[in-house]
Image (cartoon, rainbow, N blue to C red):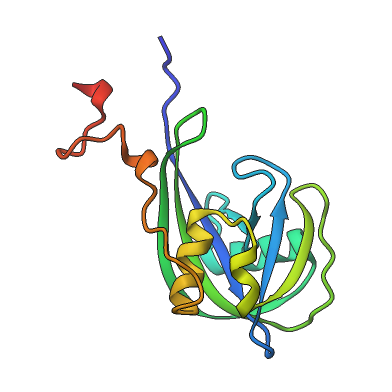
Length: 163
């Protein structure tokens, strides 16, 4: 029997857009979503305020400071990956206070300022694509909620393995 208690992983992500309407994308080199393009962010430490976590994660991953403009949306990945992890991600719009990117190599291998019109050329996670489709309507197709993540839930909100 597996007695390990599952938990929801809460994360913050910065949708950082500069004065030229370019979005900061990073290529992840850790799971989940290794190899895909995302916006910088990560898990919130226990007791850490949300915006503190966002500033810390952006600094750690790409070495810049940002000004947070406000909450854009919340997105979740349910039952993702081999461990069926559940992530709740709070996406904040922000603008950079500097532009010189220093990807840390431990979590992200590349960081780029991508013009809005070129966002469709990047293999992004469903959450990133969902948020950017809202910020730039008409430029990206919004994937909505990935169906494969919800396939193990029935309409009562219980997992098929619970029944």
